[in-house]
Image 1 (cartoon, rainbow, N blue to C red):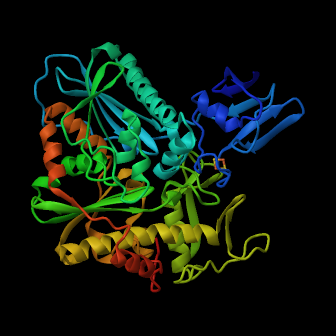
Image 2 (cartoon, helix red, strand yellow):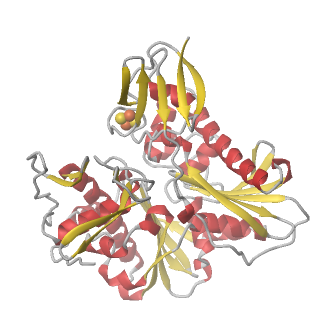
Image 3 (tube, protein in one colour):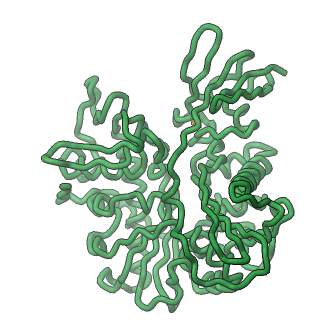
Amino acid sequence: MSELTVLINNTIHTASFTEGESLLAVLQREGFSVNAPCGGKGKCGNCTVAVQMANGSSTVCACRTPAAEGCTVVLSDTQDDLSWNFTPGSISARKDFSEGLGAAVDLGTTSIAVSLFDLSTGEKLETAGAWNEQRAYGADVITRIAYTMDHPDGLERLSSAVRRQIRQITEELCRKHHRSWQEIQRIFLAGNTTMQHLFVGFPVASIAAAPFRPYSVFDSPQDFLLDGKAVYLSPCVSGYVGGDITAGLSALELDRAEGNHLFLDVGTNGEMALGGENGFLTCAVACGPAFEGAGISCGMPASAGAINRFYLAEDQLRFDVIGGGLPKGICGSGLLDLAACLVSLGYISADGQLLCVGENGEEGVFSVADGVSLTARDVRQLQLAKAAVAAGIRILMEESGLHFCDIDTLWLAGGFGNRLDPKSAVTLGMLPEELLEKIRPAGNTSLAGTETALLSGDESRLLRIRSMCSYLELSSSAEFSEAFVEEMAFPSDADWEE
Ligand code: FES
């Protein structure tokens, strides 16, 4: 066994490794949070870490670099603002509990949010968030499922990583409020179907292959355990319409709402539900990781240094960087804005060609700033993602026999949904123009739904909402394929000004 050093936050850790192991494999095993969108396949180039050796420092791809005796891996521990993830203070539905604490958890593919409650008063003590440490195993659920299939201990690793992290966040919250983990009475958790499976350690392979049936939809009141504490999981509708959607519909009270509402949670998958008090038609589409800032050349999560917004002012392209300073890359909402600006300036054609020449004379490259650019391939990734969302909406509308004028609200849930500029989404044809004025950001509805369920103690509400949902499988739908191809085009009459 050889050893290397990991330096993070001025703290030194020692990690052992065997000959031939990659730096990524070592960092994964030791539980360090490294962004590895393609799951270590060497395809995305986004798993860079700084390495110091006796002969100097360099930045390397962690999955393609073998661990070396005596090297030091320097990890940056950015204090990212995940507050978009949180929900506003008060929750109304509250039943009296005797004593103790409760935790509501939103287990997202990209990030995790935990709210700690004093159950005797119903008071929310605090919410904390963190990037999901499973990012070290892939940016999206398909890459993580593949990891569990490629590695004999993969499921166990992913499961224990997320369980350990949720306990850690909850314990830190407890400590901050001079309480203890022992006081936790109950935990409510919602996430997409794969994340809920990974949390409890259920096999996930069947979710990735036709007919995409999950091992469980968590539809019987069953408590799972996290280090001795009872955990209730939100019921899922299907392999790709998860407990986060059931919780989201509950948070917005759409199961009691008159009229027709479109609920959209877009990330690496686009999960959607259309309906109201009489039931919901749901479906899911695969968006790829572009909206999460992965799988594109200069993509990065919505953290410090990411361009999260582009706009045109007096015909000049301007941008904002999270935390200020020089840009390091572009996150999902920035990508959407940039493409919308370039479409309206005529630099991206209706069929998606990037008609620009980069600083070094390369065709199909738009240079944004030093080291940050958009490529023709990035535009293609975005086209695929936006076409999937638009086609999903179109099929839901057709199947339900509704017209856009019948829709009362388009709710946008999830991190990307809350950050995106609706006008950019409309300019690119991802969301229908007819609904622009009806678009409402909904915050972290998955967390809000679990908070309400935790405090009301009413698990049956989520089960009832699940029973109100019917699911449309789009993977084998000829109508969806046709709509998807048509939605690949960008609207040609785009007009996008600040
Ligand atoms: S290139 Fe290393 S994780 Fe993608």
